[in-house]
Length: 325
Image (cartoon, rainbow, N blue to C red; front, side, top):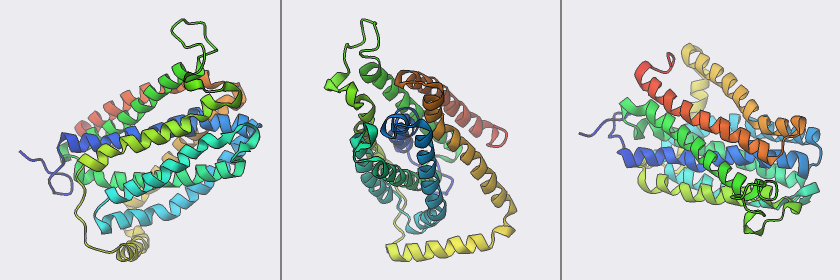
């Protein structure tokens, strides 16, 4: 028997909604390896060479990207509703994001390679594209998941994302961080693939590695998750109608106090969570002097617990409702 989604249309089958959830498996390693535990501390302490100045620059970069996302994301959400199909947008954002992540390999110690400011530019651009892809990905959930399993599918996506980060951190720990720094017999004597620690290649490799990971694991979503029906509107028409809807919604927000309160509290919560995540690794490296190995162990523990929380939270959401959970 076909189950209905929250939108009243036929929900996707297990292959479809698992493929939707796997997009977080594709995306989340960027957050974990680049934004939090490896590349950001490397950029702050080694590329910039001054952890305090590095934290400041990353703060500016995240503020700029956050402000641009705040202004443009509502319009993109409205366009997603007006246009109907979401997968072409997601594929486009991923196609633009992947080269930017790959180019982080060329951020060399002491500001060499592409340099400090271009690296910050890449971080800003990728952060914006990353959130844009999330807008369209999230917009698919009500029509993809069976109405009785929305919490489960959402939690599954978060769990997949943390498990992907967990696996990659274990690999990086084994292949790049511990070699040359451990006496354990099962650890290679030197970093794999001939990476040179003197030029920070074991830290910089996360850029190309994550770029290939994102590109590869976006494919299940593109191939197996059903998309919404095309509304038959041109991009220009969808943009105009989406912009009009955003302005109309803002003008009527006082009539939807419950929605406004939810958006405000969610913004405050997300802002706090983003601050903890973005600066956790950089702060630990700059203030506590943690190296790549310590940061990876920290990340492995937190990602493992987050994956458990995601599955449990999704289960409780379906059984008890979001607020009670």
